[in-house]
Image (cartoon, rainbow, N blue to C red; front, side, top):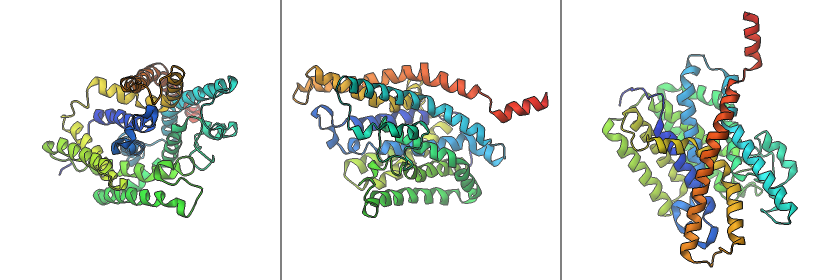
Length: 377
């Protein structure tokens, strides 16, 4: 293996974000309409799509910022501004949608879930994106946003995590292997944490409001370490897609055959490394296709807004008489419909809200930059 730089844009990893989001949606919709898709192991373990997001996030941030950190050009304030621009507008929009839904349902005497999940006193923590840091008793409001709170914790710690990986660059393979081992060990430890701390979730998929900020760190570190390893160790061109296929096959085997879910991290790591290799060698079709990349770019909106769509869609179906006892074809069509609506709405949300807001925030000048310009004048 030799050094061979990654291209500036890793399109297959952008497309992978859509696959990760779709995997999570399968998991969240699995119990609707009595279709029993949760019996499929790949669907039942769809919560691990969030951990794929976490690892992918570390990899991409390292790709964008690791060199500037090494060359001491990294600006923490600008980095955080860009991260806020990336996640906060859609987080705020989805939270607002849930507030409107809850207030509207309460006004007409309908319910959207447990009252404990919609506590007004929890809103400040959600607005500050600290609701997965143990600041709230349970996941609430826009439930999927716990992972954005966890991401925010990782963003704040990124310079420290990246600096540690950079210092150990000579041993990048060992660091990547150590991070992978840490992911597997932390999965086991957090899955059994309820034995010592009964108030936390009883399995890894429930580690949200209480310790979501802890759940992300091993996966995020793995992503940074994989990038540091990958930029110095290029696989032969002929290996790129076989690595992807073997890794995807491993993920399917672990989830389908009922193996211990902690083993899935070996597949997640291989999938990221392999897809990055397809981009490096220019053999990244079809994952670099325009439509696939667009879906990946809109995947954050898809992930953030699927809960309010879920609530409206399935409550409407219930009012229309579509239930678990309805015709199978009708139920399958209704399930396909909710995915289609989620994807279409997320595309519009990405184009009309997320991207314009992100660009607007990034154009804002931080106070120290304004002072510097004034001093130069």
